[in-house]
View (cartoon, one colour):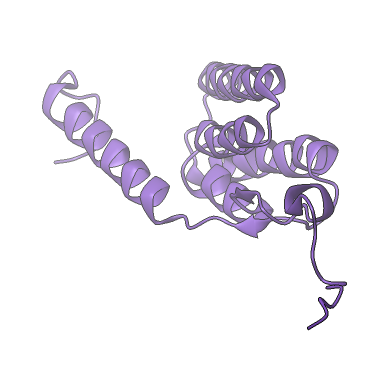
Length: 147
């Protein structure tokens, strides 16, 4: 009985195939950045970068996301803009920076599996509900437009 050579055998499958990484998609980062804030999208991208071994770059993305959100909030407050449309536009610009610059820089090809957004979506909703409840219960009287 002769042994046949198997042409499909790969000595180390991770060297040949880069599809083993599972990260949040560009669309997920975009959506979280717009509907929640740039910080939420930044955390997803930071998680992606850490999964891929870019720890220093992951911290840079988180710092950018936090500073972008804080500076934008201060500027919008200083100007007196309270419209949610401006917040969505501002978050859209942050999402574009996260996805078109940072994401494309470190993940230029689509050689990854998209990771489920269920867990970060639940966490984000819980955080947002907690913030709304806190503000509603502890904001000074007259600060909220609720009657």
